[in-house]
Length: 259
Image (cartoon, rainbow, N blue to C red; front, side, top):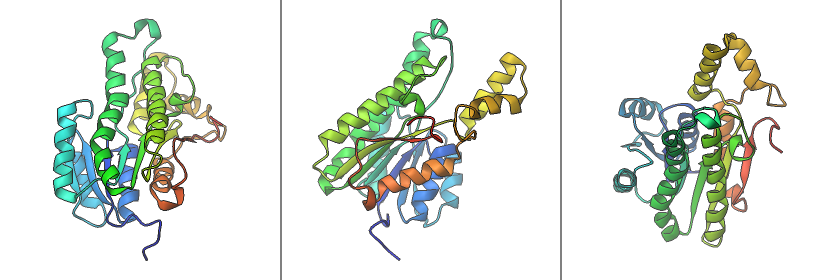
């Protein structure tokens, strides 16, 4: 049954959709009727996800979100395939760690490019459709690193703080246009990024994988790792009509780590 919360026929672009949080967001939006453009760099992974999504007819766009020409071409193709973009979920991102004094300029720029510039470029590409329609939803997947500091990930943390600032500024610009802009800020979540981080701790410290994972979970007051579906459900709510008055917010999905 269609309700004011349904996303039937809404064209939603999800970046970094091939795995982890992005894939779970795609599944959640498709289950509620949205037509998906799955944007990422790995066609085979995107195709496997598209084949399993309900509804059918979803589109795949292979692009590098940090490259302006690549983003412009991907959105033009997506628009031609599925019509104007109504929803954008800026999920594509990378996390790499290094002590500050060993953080190279290349690492710094790469974290900014993928996590912050990518969100900027995709929002610019999607916004004209939303302005034309007088309705739109932009959800930026930030991180608790965008709300507080973490040691040894200064470049990533700076980029995610930038995403939160971008969210707030753009939300004010379009507040009277029927468009909301929000950030969802997960804590440590069960994804490949966390598994890579656990492996890195094991390699550097000799701790077991269980001990390393427990250390990550310890910063969450619930003493657990966030599940991708919990992040996806927050995104889903922000995309619906029930959240029409919620904009410029950074919603922490972290078991109380950030209040």
